[in-house]
Length: 160
Length: 355
Image 1 (cartoon, rainbow over the protein chains, first blue to last red):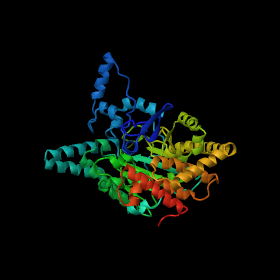
Image 2 (image 1 turned 45 degrees about the vertical axis):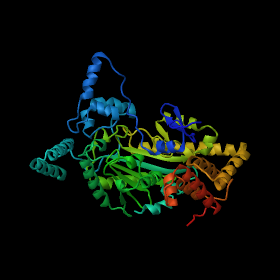
Image 3 (image 1 turned 90 degrees about the vertical axis):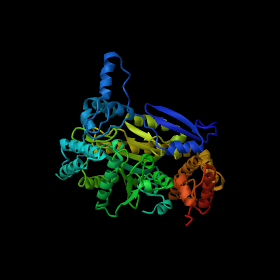
Image 4 (image 1 turned 90 degrees about the horizontal axis):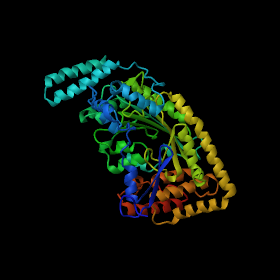
């Protein structure tokens, strides 16, 4: 049997276990199998919704373009990559994420360990995130006085 | 930490001790944590990543752990060394292959591994030989508490520990048990077991986790759900199902011994014979043959070699380990020859270590 990725003979036969009782067979030569097994693979994004039409499509496209004010990620980017941009996204996209979480976990509320130390309030957390973004912009623009002021504010919040 | 010294041992998860260690290879728990005040790794700038790494590295160094963890800067490692750590399950393939500042803090016994700037800012991992989830949980819970005193985790009352991927949010915990199930594979009952596990929301993966095949008849059983169930509940769900799988595997082994003893004996002897005399050996074939040999030892069919030796051969014949042991980099063909030579040498010595 030939390797599925190059013309060499397939020596390795891999069975991938997929969800919903599906199995995928792969036949590869040693080199390709090695690449396949050791190089990080593109992970599948959480199920994207079926392509909508008409009015619904407009709604979806405006949702897709919505952006987190803290990290700047657009909802569509999350859809494509399956990865959120910052902790604030859970608040920002709460309504959209809830059905997704329900789908993945069957639940939408945490139950279990809580940090013993009181975490910084959500507001402080988001403010810190925003300040870091501003700091980055200030440094890029070489506005060092602004940068120093933002830096002090970050230190103050971190220590409080 | 000296990676050369790692090469010659087999690490915690292949020690071959602990409860039910004829079937349960190891227990592992992983926690995903993020710092509250930074974007997640995929969205973090190089500057952020440097800051995150410096901060976590410093806080980890201050942990009052005995013995202390050694911090390894991953970009400073050769590709071969990174692969060595992946083969030992001390870092993920993702951390090995990513860009930018990142690292891992390791305990000397290889039970604790803290990955920095993986998909989440921090991935804590504790591994134990055999069926020991409770011990693993108590260890990781302690390290998590100690870290939490020093850093502000991203946490919300509603969604729990916030993670880059919503599949990990909540407890951020993935707990898994690695099993050796050769008899269920031989009896073609393994898929039935998978289906039963998937119905109760447990995932089955191969030796090297996500996207890897189950070579050597090793399977990892882990929880899928991380939100809405407490750590204790998740652990007890896994803890309850493992003894059933162990029972099925034991029954399948007994049936093989009762109804197919001769062909089983033949299979084990051929596997051993091939390992002792072949001159070219792929890692896949090695895993399959070692799996039969391991089964043979556990059933008392084969007495020339011990379980710890077989476990060590499983890891030493992986590509990066083999190349480190040979002290040189080898291409596919050369590796197959070197692997066969190494196996012959080790097995002729009755399983004793060459040093």
